[in-house]
Length: 535
Image 1 (cartoon, helix red, strand yellow):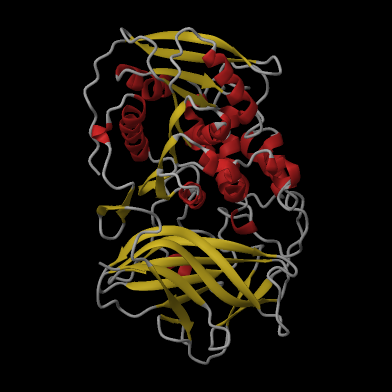
Image 2 (image 1 turned 90 degrees about the horizontal axis):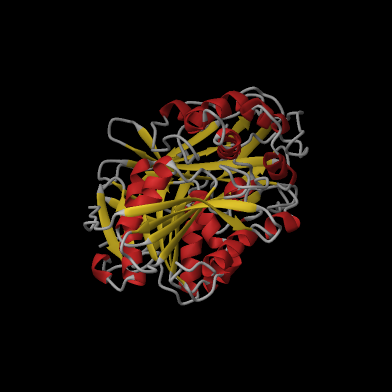
């Protein structure tokens, strides 16, 4: 995708540390970047817990102000001079609306508003967008979603590595060595995760102190209640009247729920724009692409200049093919689902399943099955060779025949497995890989489903039909390659290990090994469902 920027014309003035009062009396600080010579130009609001100076000030303040917008870059409560204590996700609705009320009282505010930002900054947009009023004309969101609960409890399990990375990052980013926080957080997280200690102790091990938000995540894993209801804005996405553009990455931790936001807006009759590239969450490449996308979007919807808009609303990078493609919608037209069945002899085929005995493996939480690659919050999540993982005895591997032609798979992916486990508490991890002619096996997408007593319900033989949602894909399996499916009981430390006992997430320590049986026959036709696109 070629990124082009129009020439910028404005010099920029900056007002630092503007006090913005909140409803409870707390004062947050903001910086205002204004283009010299522009009279009450459109305003872009950016609300961030990561600071408002340095690269943040340049990328979100100076860049857009030079193109004729004024930018208000505000620090969320509890950091970088803003008052109060950070309650992650919990204050962004009220604080965001209070900030809008303050904006409208400023003499320099012209009545045309946009919002911009990735990740948490994007969530802060969704927290107020349905309630912002008609002066909110446009939003530019990237690698984010309107709710983070499902990303924290992916498939009902707990996304240990990403959540621990984030609380470790936010605990130190406002300190004297804050600039190194993003570099140190993955290493500290991995060290804590591999300590073998109960999850409830890992915030201290990783961040150096007890962190309430991490403890809240553990506490509300099984009983979300009002805690998550107050932090989930997905139900009101369709009510957003602003024009919305979304930029995501195939390897991003929030991609499945970002796409749900897109489809919710489409179902409500909206016309959002969606771009998905070969990017992971902390990838600097999507930051530049998202800024260019936002600038074209804001010029169109705030300045009346649509010259930078593309003709089709959906743009996808197809990995394996190495090319960008434009489509009118998601799921893309012409997509059809095709079941690839697990077969005897660890084969995988679009043919009907053949009679055969179930395959078995033993998952031991004391020696959890690791993850090689896959979406994490910080660090490179691009595909990795999985052969070392596939050689383990606690991983089942099913491999398809050599493909006779290029096969494009674009859309949602799911698995339907018939599984019997010796413990009622267990995890089922499913991964699709692209096997190259030289034998390397690169992960394409994966997913997890946590099994609980009675969920999914077992049949008379104790076999459960387990549905696993995998990450969406846009990938070409080239001619001569093979499609491979992995089935395992863990993906540690990306996913917290299932101890097999049902003890509370934060304090459990006893461990029970679990025997998994995967059935694949005409009565119990285990399969992965792939979205094929032709033409």
